[in-house]
Image (cartoon, rainbow, N blue to C red):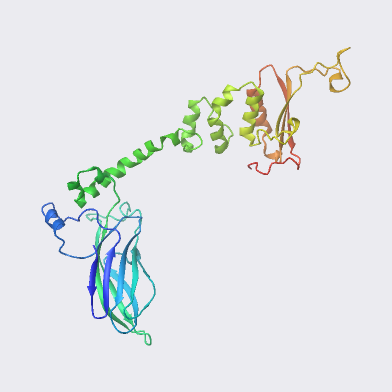
Length: 353
């Protein structure tokens, strides 16, 4: 609904951009008659907490001289709710300018603990006035040349009335009543819509991680950071599947240390996570050749060496790496661990800290 007013100086039109979805009834016996006939003709703006609303004001200069305008609002609403935006202060004869009344209230308007007191109720209907003054360019004196009245209705944003017959949607009280049930049930509905995120260790709330870890038999305690714990729970089944193999051990060390699993430009013996098998026979008469295989007692069956090459080796917990290796290796294998500084030529700049 817009309101147009005209005087010998100005033509004024107020147009609310957010109108009421239901008529603000005063009583069950009168709402039909009031909705059928608008007797006020006053622009009615609906303001939802936490959402911006506005009234567009069109001003036309009907006089034969330029006007320097000043706009102000007043009413029974808090002054900080409203901000005025204009295209300028001067309006030439016959020209038109637009101004905007911006309204925004706190998102917790209805939930504020100070909103209600003993034997009191929240005021949700307000009345305001727009005053337009002509300012003298020399002495700065103001003279009121026009005014307009508007109404503000604070209403919660609710979706439930759209599931009702149209007859019930015309009653403002029904929407406000259903908002109570919507606020009670909507968190559960939102949780069901995003249930997949609660069951994914990478996106689940931190408090749910022990429950997800129990699902896959992963220890929920331990010296793990939350980000590493998420990755380990996510890959737990793959770690179990490859337990006792070189692939499974490399994957576990990759998830813990953050070192690249494999870098194609590096030779195998220079990989950030390198596992060297030492399955040699040592010195055997008539079979051994000069080199590593010719060492006396050099044969160590089922032995391997784990080399971790990191640009920040001091950040790797060697004791925890030993625990991981002993847990993942076959029981009959022996091993050695070496944590080394990665060479500058192969240092990975993307390694997380």
